[in-house]
Length: 226
Image 1: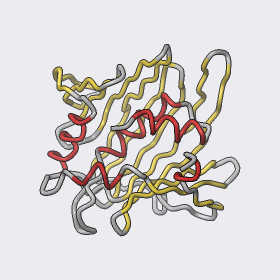
Image 2 (image 1 turned 180 degrees about the horizontal axis):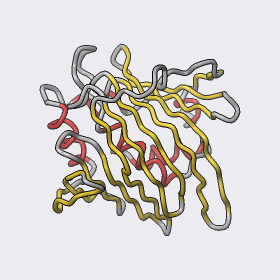
Image 3 (image 1 turned 180 degrees about the vertical axis):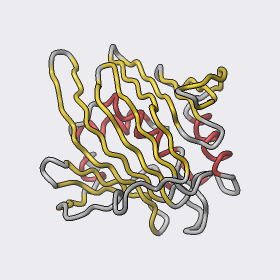
Image 4 (image 1 turned 60 degrees about the vertical axis):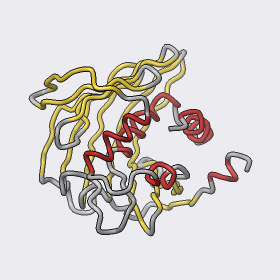
């Protein structure tokens, strides 16, 4: 996983780079890319609520639908780094269509957002054909330098604890739900802990839709000066 490229892209969009690792973790456990019929997650639907702490404080509600083909989360948080703070009230939607993965980020205060194609999606899934969702996600974690270092229980959920490159760690249940993630990079510390997990819950009707928000499509190649 080319972390430096992720950081460059999202820094240009104004996001704290350290937050990105949690986006990567969430998305990587939901992508497969073979066909529209392929199950991308072990569970058809689930939802989870997270508490954020460290340099970023707040809450996040995540919804995975249709075996992970669509994922969205709502985040209300404030990030403080070197005396500067940034508040976020956003909805992020990821979905797979026609062999590509799209990421939509909506500023819920302004009701505007951006849509962009994930430039690394096809490269990530290209060598992962013929895998189950669990085999795929664990293989992806290993590509990120991940190693299983033990097992523990987080708020009643048993999970395997992984260490990842860049001083990050995550804990994933047997049915592929991330219940804890931590990162400590360059003095920036971020933690997400699941306080509630609901299986067979797709969330409220329309939760992963754009609604009436105004969306601008971005060309990441142009943003990177290519």
